[in-house]
Length: 148
Image 1 (cartoon, rainbow, N blue to C red):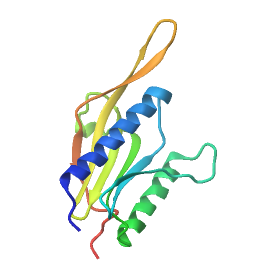
Image 2: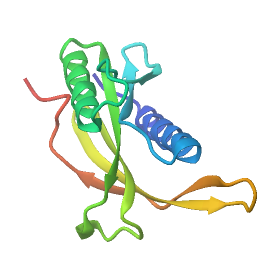
Image 3: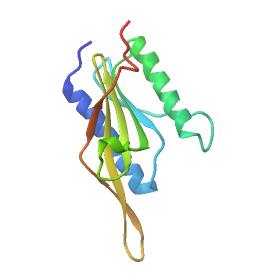
Image 4: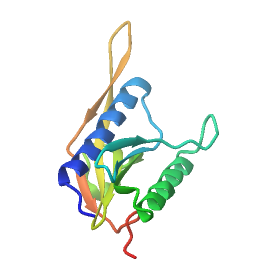
């Protein structure tokens, strides 16, 4: 199934916007995702393993398995899986902290690293503001939409 490149951009923007909201509110976030259904609509996807404080790697794995299953059954035509990571030094990011979005559809698979830093503002009332830098795309092999 072919997908409009604008939908992939919409998935990436959703992940960046949601991560920014979570970072501004909490200073961190658990893995989350979004997918484009066969109806062409972007839908948020979260993972829950029943624990109050789950291991982020377990949530990432749970979401990845769900995307793989949904891709195989034809329920989705694109997926984005976001995680809070340290960006590998080889990509020469301006700061080490980053949002990594695994963006994938049939024939397209990338890690998009978006470096960020948190700035503390305010004297009496402290707030946090996430400042994002230019994305760094890295081509990877398919994980969710593997060829048959």
